[in-house]
Image 1 (cartoon, helix red, strand yellow):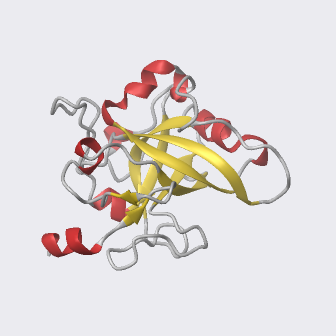
Image 2: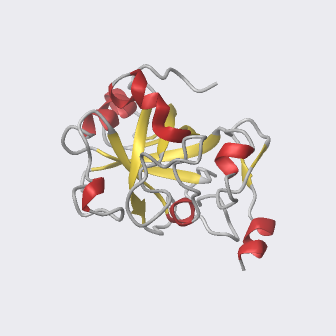
Length: 203
């Protein structure tokens, strides 16, 4: 079944080039670090009861997010390039892994207000298979809400971690944003400032 999965799933990177399957072993580490198209939502109901366990509750200075089910269940973990997993916790390889996120356009509300700036978040939960956002499957590896995105992030807006969501969504506040996402092995970009504020834009 796993080999069939690897043969059938194909994700598209934001620049139109082939992106490696999220479920492929070491896909984020050994085949480059593709920039994915992504969609993003504002999560106001995040807390300590997350899929990655109590130790994965949002931490000061670090943004937290849930990632879509397909990516969560088939991630290869937050390796640091040397085979270590210093940031990974909980029952799944996706837990504790970091992503560099960049807003590009506000899907809703389209109120003309300014978007925020790029952030780095740590995965601490899974976004259920809700239609439109997190409904990526092996047979249809992009979501169906008009975003055509292989990955979706539901950014926690509660507590200190919520500062990352505010920084990312900017003046539009709670809503839906489309943009770009890139895996950050070892969470190295968190060293560039709170919420990865010094990471800069994705290129």
